[in-house]
Length: 89
Length: 165
Length: 112
Image (cartoon, rainbow over the protein chains, first blue to last red):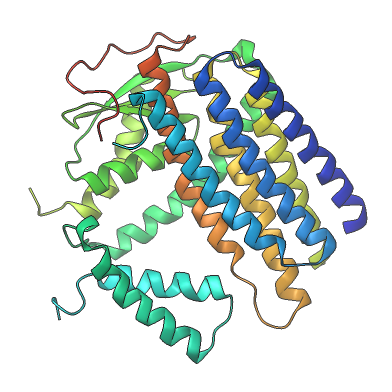
């Protein structure tokens, strides 16, 4: 059962990557691009978790945790930049 | 007590966080976690000017239940709207007048709104009196505001602010 | 039995992740696009993480609960970044399908 479900899930997540990437390129405004970047982070977490289940290894978990944290900090910094034109006040 | 353990809730949360991070329940991890949970509130005390007090644990538990159900409901709702296509959406900005006064309660309300059916909180006015909320699909803005106030704001007010006034 | 449950979680997680990005690509203005990634994608990843917790708890001895950390973290951060992005978009006057609220002149942008 898992053997059939996991490839389907990989495909769906890969399509999600493509669509987020399309939004990253197409824009049209800066907030759209930041949102696309944030979505790409979350998609990456989904992909890493899926990879962890598929390969039966827990080592991808730390990477997912770090990406979650860094992604959030990055998004907040970029949004702050749009609001203020400056990151560190 | 107050002096040596300024934020008991934070200490408990940090200890639990450490145990989850280590992903094991051993005496060593527990001691180290408790030590960190005790020390970190001192190092970050400037971020916690006031002590958080929870007045009605029962109301909090019910609120968390409603919240959990609404996250799932909200995601299904949004997913359905996305699949139906952009042409049928009726996006609107609504302004929610706030009865909450403390920063903590307002930020919790804003986050709750963002995670539940079809709404994202977009801006808080400077006087902290109104919250601008964007909704994906609505026909009755007044009903939406009433629902937000009754379903999420009232319990938060009860939990964090009752008796403060 | 558990395998069916696990498959269900994985599949629904992947579908929600997909739908969130579909919303991002398909909807017509920034504010509506914001909804997909904050709600659908977050729940999708949450569902995948639950599947991972169940999988590793059953396979190894002992419960694996550290997935809960990432789930909690995502559920706390997703609305915050959505709020900041919406605020930035309002500040920049990004094109919107809905009439945007009047400017809040009393705040300096980015305060609070």
